Length: 470
Image 1 (cartoon, rainbow, N blue to C red):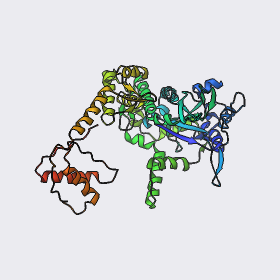
Image 2: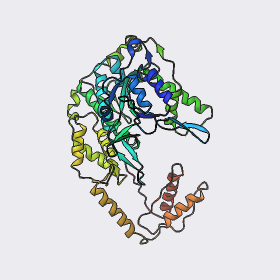
Image 3: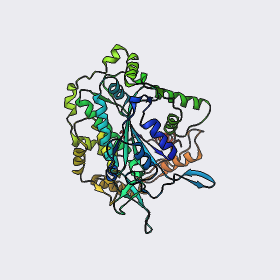
Image 4: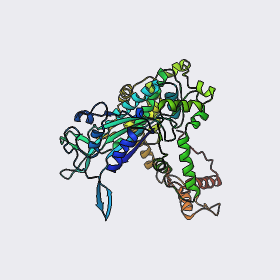
């Protein structure tokens, strides 16, 4: 999973480094986390290797840690607006990357190689995310964004949840600064495209992770969200998901009290941030592993041992042409224009864990000669464009050329609304080959279409309902 969160408060940013990023979720002298710098922006400043607090804090304050000079134009983190103190700039963005729970369990209880596989997958993913870095252009009347392709980042790998369950994850801190090569100066980072591309980056991470797992003997089982390691029981995964369960209970309590939630995902993230258990002092890696081992049965411990994936060797040989074709059909079935990274995300999800690189995938996509916009990442295909033009032509040519289905329609049920009656009447009285019908979520579209069906059957027509299956 890849989840982004912005930090607006300078004091909280400094505290976050001292009390979380560099120590993880348990205190012990040996548990200090050695963060590492990443990104072309970090290279340009001269930051490499281990993250030092002084350098991290300098960047949070908007200063160049190498020279002490101001790095970006805006450094005040708060301002007064309408008599109230409000955030004036973002300090950094925390892109947290975590594997499926079964991967965390095996990595931290059995096989240390997996942590390195995770690290490599994170680095590869963040390198790709960096390419979407932009900055705002507000000169000579322009109001635009320009691609810079560089960030100043620091990553910190942690290994437990707040409930002290195995939870391998990496905080990728991206500072609010990027170098604009056109204006030859450092400016604030515009992260809009980075956020739009996060599903692509997430699927790249899953692909690289699964590919690494396959190489060391672990088979995977895909699900609707991500994947799990083959052979691990759902009971064991649930056993080590106490933090998830705590948040579930908090959501239930909130709803049971009669309060509403507009966005459940955002509310869960808010609870995770606000309702944190106090860190358990003096826990060590050894005591935690013993603690985790005591919670497992012998059968569960045996499930952590890799089982050779030789039985699925044929499946790991990629047919990139078929993978890209599937992604193409899947996306262009409902849209005529997509972002190129959406195509890559779908292809990576389809071919997850198979032996191909992003570079090979890009080469296969390039062979398709998609039509591209003048700027940005939007693409379409000649086939899609031709199909869309044919649909428009067919709809136009079919206007007013047919007899109505039923001019004597009368509502069959009392609960139908005036708006729904108007929609049904319009469809049944249409003289066009194509009639479009759409509405917002929860407005009774399905109910209305059932009434259309009743009207058609009442007029003696056979009805066949078709819908996309992907």
